[in-house]
Image 1: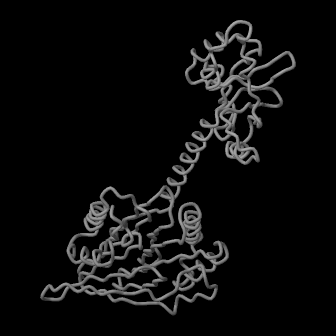
Image 2: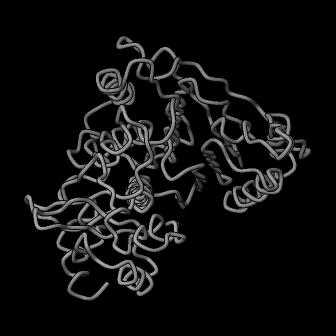
Image 3: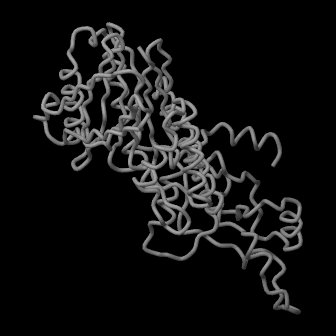
Length: 394
């Protein structure tokens, strides 16, 4: 394809059919077969070319029909023109049509005969032809590009995943199984040297779940930018989030979440666990015996009940000495190896005990390595989030 043809195609956005149309001058229906062979030989990527007569466009000549033609004809019965090889496709496309809609037109037909190439028009004038295989490939590339952009947006919505404070440090790990997912987290500084650490797991997968995480991010961004975090109490913030999710999410969708409000000066945690996994508290005694306490969920998930009341599940934890807190989404324990065996809670607890004194950053890095080692060549099927909070000695 020459530069002029490329420039013409680039006049159409990537989501329109014209962007991938093969633009070639039509052959006349009386054209010689040898001339047609030479045309296709000169361009190995050419799949088809329009064909016209004195009455206008009559169809197209496709590469596979030309190459597979019967070459045994002799004498007066031998047809040396392309006329008998011309096909008229049952569908024509407009160059400005969206590629997804064009694909539906091709395949959602009562007649299920295979269509390899289609004529493309622009404002009633012939533009060229498009190969259906190339159309499908382009749609997949277009979707992947859009997913990559959406993934980048979702990653930016996460914000901070690290807090280094004189009294505590926090680290978060988020591994997506696909480009988009329903696991989400927020680390937010609040007035009065307080911080909110929150992990979310939206029911469902991919796009619908990702849109919900965007909604959650927008909620907290609005609170920060409008200064509402200075005026609203903790239960009011959570209650407002639930009301928003109830009003906007599809029926049957819900969000499990754990909210940890950290008061650094008072060395105190307020925990609201709405159907998320357990929160593990790691401390040790004076004789350095490991103690692992498990704080179970105290509230139902968000987004189901408009009367959801976070104050009924509030849990206050006083922090003494060095203490560590760890929680994770079910994507960790549901991780499967090549045989289908689950990572499981027993292995997670064993990992916690084995890495009892490891710093927050090293802890999560070791966890990631352990999960990948466990999986082997298996592919992740669910998102995985892990949060590690470490309080330093008084």
